[in-house]
Amino acid sequence: MFRNQYDTDVTTWSPAGRLFQVEYAMEAVKQSSAAIGLRSKTHVVLACVNKASSELSSHQKKIFKVDDHIGVAIAGLTADGHVLSRYMRNECINYNFTYESPLPVGRLVVQLADKAQVCTQRSWKRSYGVGVLVAGLDESGAHLYYNCPSGNYFEYQAFAIGSRWQAAMTYLERRFENFMDSSREDLIKDALISVRETLQEEKLQISVCTVAVVGVGEPFHILDQETVRKLIDTFEIVREDGSPAPEPGDAAPDLGEAAPAAAAEEGAAPMDI
Amino acid sequence: MTKQQANWSPYDNNGGSCVAIAGADYCVIAADTRMSTGYNILTRECSKITKLADKCMMASSGFQADVKALQKLLAARHLIYQHQHNKQMSCPAMAQLLSNTLYYKRFFPYYSFNVLGGLDSEGKGCVYTYDAVGSYERVGYSSQGSGSTLIMPFLDNQLKSPSPLLLPAQDAVTPLSESEAVDLVKTVFASATERDIYTGDKLEIVVVNAEGIRSEYMDLRKD
Image 1 (tube, helix red, strand yellow):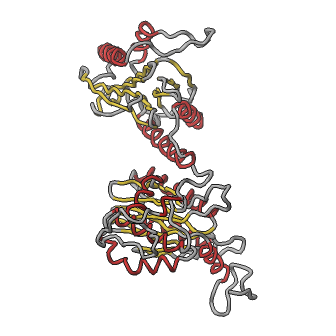
Image 2 (cartoon, chains in turn orange, brown; image 1 turned 45 degrees about the vertical axis):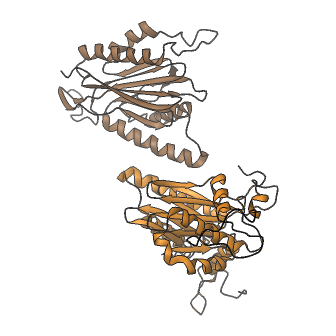
Image 3 (cartoon, rainbow over the protein chains, first blue to last red; image 1 turned 120 degrees about the horizontal axis):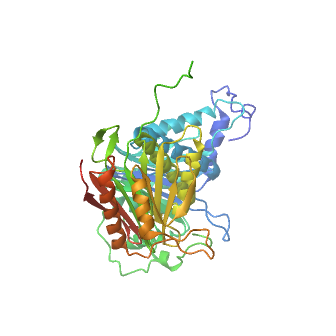
C-alpha cells in the first residue's frame, strides 16, 4: 500500500470506493503479534503470542476477561484494546444489573462493531487500531467472533489475526472440521499448535504465549503457566529432528524420546508476574 | 391554613433485625428472615444478608427495595474493582465504598440500616456499623433494625468493647470463640423475637473465617 491523495481523512472516499484510513487501521492489526481463537460446541479457546519490547520489560497484556462468560484477545494497538475492554466490561455489568442475566455475546459484539463504525464516519476521530477476538458462551452455545476496526464482525469456527496469521490459518483450515466435537484438551492443543505455526523460527515456550479458556461450567480465565507448560510438553511441539508435531487425535508417540527442547529454556521473562 | 403534607411516601419499613460480632479470627453476621409491612407479613423467608466480597458480608434492614438496589450497586462496583485491581476488595475498602455510596444519596437516602462484617486484611474479624447516610465506624459488634434497641444493650452487657477513645488502643474484637459467639447470637435473637413484632420466623447466621463462609439457620417464633 502506498500513499495517495485520498488517505488523509477517514471521511474521504477514494474513487474506487475505499476508505483508506480504515484499511490502514486494519494494517495495524496485521503488524502486531498474533492472536488465535477456536471453538467447539462447549468451549472457546484464545491463545496469543506475547511480545515484549525488550528483555528488560514485561510483555503486553493481550487477553482480557470481560465477564465470567466472555473474554477477548486483541491484536494491534494495545491501548485501544484496553479501552475497548473497559467498554465491554461496563456493558456487561450494566446489562447484568438491569436484567440479572449475562449479556448475550452476539449483542455485545454488535455494540462493539457499532462503536467502531462511529469512528469511521467522524472527521475528528480515527478508527480503533485493534482487532478483537471475542470468545463467549451464552444460551445459544459457544461463540467466537472477530471484530474489525472497520466495524465489521463475523462469527468464526476458528480464526487468527496478527503477524503471520496465514501460517496459523493454514493449520486451522486443515483441522477446523474436527473442532465442533473436540474435547477441551484437544482444542487447547490445537490452539497451541496454531500459535507455534506463527512463531516459525522461535521455540514455543510458556514465556511466549498466553492461553485462555471459557466453557460450559467454566468461567473465562487465563490458564496458569504450569498448566500450559505441561500441555506443551505432552505433545512435544518441537522435536530435535525437525519432524512435524503429532496432531491431537493421532496415535500418541512415545513420550520418552527427544527431551522437549521447549522445556530447556523455560522460565518466565523478566518482570512477568 | 396548615402546611400541606405529602400523602405518599417513597419509603416503607420492612422491619427485621441484623447483628454482627467480630472475633479474633472470625466474624458472625446474623439477621432474621421476616419481611413485613405495617402489621402484615410479606414473607417469612427473605434473606437480609448478602456477600459483597470473598471475606465481606453485609446485613441490612429497613426498606428492602433500597437494600436490594444498594446490594446490586455494590456488587457491580466490586466487579469493576476486580477488573481493575485483579483481586477481591478487602473488608475495610468495601466499608469505605459503602459509606461513600450511601452519602452519595444524602438528599434522598437509601432507607437501609447496614452492618458490614468480615475479615480485615490481617485475617482478624471486623464489623462496621452504619446509619442511613453513610456515617460509619469500626466496632467489635453491632446491631441494626427494628430489634436493635432490644439487642444492643444485651450485647453491650456481654461484649462491651473498650471505647476507641481509650488510649492505648485496644482490640475491639471479642475474646469469645466462634461457637460461643454463634450461641450468643441465637440467644439474642430468641429474646428480641419475644418482644419485637417485626423480628421472627427464622434466623440466618453466616460465619466468615479463614476457611471460608458457612451458613446456619435456626427457627424463631412465628407470631
